[in-house]
Amino acid sequence: MILILCRNLKTMIIDTLKIEINGLQILKDKHLNNFHSKTNTKNRPTTWFFNPDKTEERYLPVVELKEFTEYDRFLIRKISAQFSAPKIINKNNYFGIDENDYHSLIEKLEKDFDYIFNDNVVTKNHIINADIQSVAFAFNFVLPNSFPNTIELLKIIPFLSLGKRYKKIKPRFYPHEEEFGFNVGIYNKQVGARFYDKGAQTINCSKTPEEKEISKKIKIDLLPRNVARFEITFQNRTPVKKHLTTKLGGNSLQERKLHEIFNNNLCQSILLEAFNTLANDLDVQSVDFPLIPVERAFRIAKRAGLNDYDVYAFIGRARAVQQLGSLQLSLISDNYYDRRERFRTNKKMEKIMKLNPLPTFTYKEIFDKCRDQLERFKIMKPEDFMDYGLDKQFE
Image: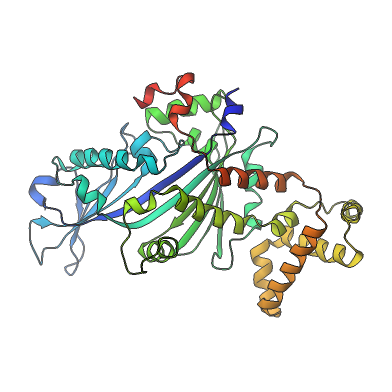
């Protein structure tokens, strides 16, 4: 019954954020008792860190600041803080947050900074006017019960592509006695994309009491275990300004603030655009299409209405994608042929597939279900499970 409910409850998250807060009045001798310092060379300022112990039950931001001795020996005017927004609010990032949680985040961050600095030196106004240095947008896909497990979907991600801008792919296993996971990264210095097994990660990496409680519920099927998490990260200020300017207007030099990204339409647009590029029908169909035995491939293609030439063309492309991956196929093709010709060929193949649709197999069906969840964009929150005893740890 709970799993049926979960099919209509999906998770949108603005997850990891790094912000820079300016205009502070932080005194080294008064406010940095919880910090440790690292002295650099003579030409560089001392760096101070607040990095909470991961074994502690309370989740807190990681804070960094520099002591500019050439200006003022004792006064530090700005800090950088990195944190997971859902963990600040819910003490876990299994459940989602949305634009309605913005004010709650500001209030809880102010209290956390009070604890870190032993004083109210970082106010709500400081946080509201903080500059965004990096941000990760994420969405949890709850896979249907008919699909065996999350890793079977993640295994084919390295064969898909977000375009030639993303040239690094890092699949990674993290084994565990009870669970296993799979993490695929596609990234460069400006933008990153990740797909991973959120159910396994929650079970394996639980730290706070809230995370451990959720892990217990997942193990006994009171919460979905079969969850694939998709993340898009703007790694630094340059892509934050560049990409948000295209979405929000303004210019690529202006700093972006928290209230601008706490916008459901913006988050959905960024995630859906990236997902549609990654999971385009031609590449997914190429990975999904059964090639062995070959006779079966021809029989399926013939029933779909493909002519002899198109069958050979599609089977050849599907074989190349399943062997090399979509990105590598594009890179190799561009070494020998004009990339514009490759683009036209892919468009022609997409048109053929639309006119003669092939049957839907396992992966194509799953990607279609994920796209449907992302388009409906329903947020899964702790209060959705209050009837099942999950509200107590969020009081």
